[in-house]
Amino acid sequence: MNTLTTEPLASLLDRLFVEADAATSPAMASFSRAERERLIRSKTEYLDLYGRLKDLWLPVSRETGTLLYMLTRSSGAKSIVEFGTSFGISTLHLAAALRDNGGGRLITSEFEPSKVKRARRNLVDGGLADLVDIREGDALKTLSTDLPQKIDLLLLDGAKALYRDILTLVEDRLKPGALIVADNADDSPDYLAHVRSATSGYLSVPFADDVELSMRIG
Image 1 (cartoon, rainbow, N blue to C red):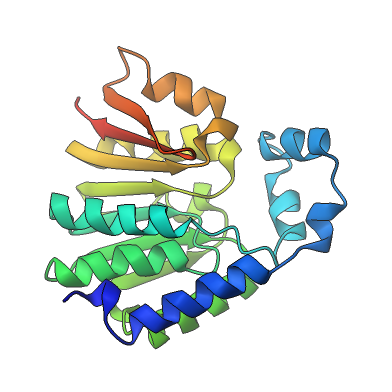
Image 2 (cartoon, rainbow, N blue to C red):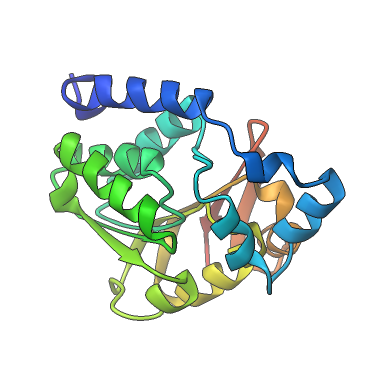
């Protein structure tokens, strides 16, 4: 028995994944593939892009959610930073693992107010709100202050163009052995080039189809 597979969280996650699978975004349909790829990789237009996609769920997959729970549990993580809350599906998985690790603190950042409101409600419904600090605004600002001295795990699942910037922002607080999970990392080639470099201070491997898993070694 664990928090992830028992009530109230188990049925909440089932419902949220069903809602996410059924959701559509008229704004997304209006983009050509080339325009979408350009905007995703832009460091200057990401706020506009994700603002236009405010109704899009952009969740981790069920498998990635389970992976996040397993990595947090197996590493004994107590201190987690998440970039990109969205509606809070990944946040729920991470917070469940913190609960089962005996407690801890999860700092997560989301700039879209409607998503922050929904994520907070989901955390209350899942009985995990006491473990999570949701910071509303641009993560380049919200994650620049008041972070733990040591971070055990970092999840990158926000604007792909900022993965390298967010990593740089928190890098000096990542403890040796800290894990970094980057969802949809193929959309952030500069991030991948960095963490895969032999001189970067990381060991990094692609994991499944859409995740890059890295470990801080320096």
